[in-house]
Image (cartoon, rainbow, N blue to C red; front, side, top):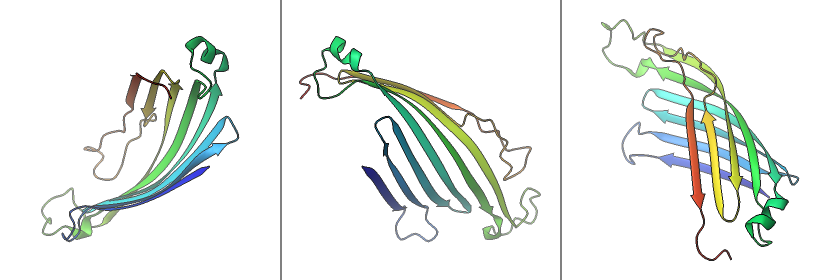
Length: 171
């Protein structure tokens, strides 16, 4: 099955130029061992706008032998999944919306744009009794050149881990 989601989120209803976000995403399995998805997004918050696309792929390995060792029954097979995604987004700062900043040398009164590509990866284990995963985002350190190079940091990787156990009846 393919899952398609559409989001249109407006914050601070009734306030002019309030932040808003739109997304369109789809994901699904390809055969028994592959998964793929994408996400298109648009986010505006004041003078800052971010638009982008993310493409994702996962490969799943079913662990049938482990099911009998875990006494998991026959409702769900333990599995391990490896995933990777690639994304690119355009960041934009519209300085034409700024008022009376003529004396500040950092503001040019123009529309500044930059494109930032990157990649993410992760591994996830699932069984009816437990799950565990690790992942990392923004694996490529990239200098974002939207404002002033002296003040703009490089993107840095973020790492995540999760572990959980299931208690009680399994059915």
